Length: 110
Image (tube, rainbow, N blue to C red):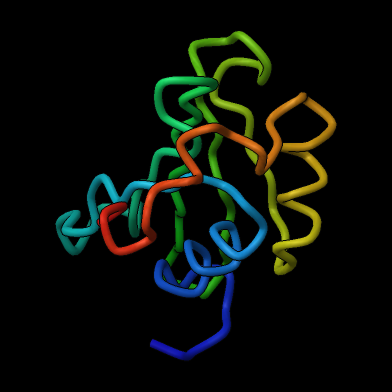
């Protein structure tokens, strides 16, 4: 996988953490025919937004946000190559990188 792409889980997580979000890797071993690539949780114990990356056979990528319908519509999907766009969507819904859990060491977030 290429580095510094939104569909790269490590890069995605690093950028969110660098902006103060608390992020936990949830799953990254979906089966080959499954278009899901990985799933993370942003700000658990607060907003608990599940973000799943989808990639099809043609290289198209989109992200699905699921928080039980509290701040995002059910299974809200966003197609973008920009982490800034993703963070703007989080911020517009009141999900900021100022979660109290961010005081924990990043190494303990794995």
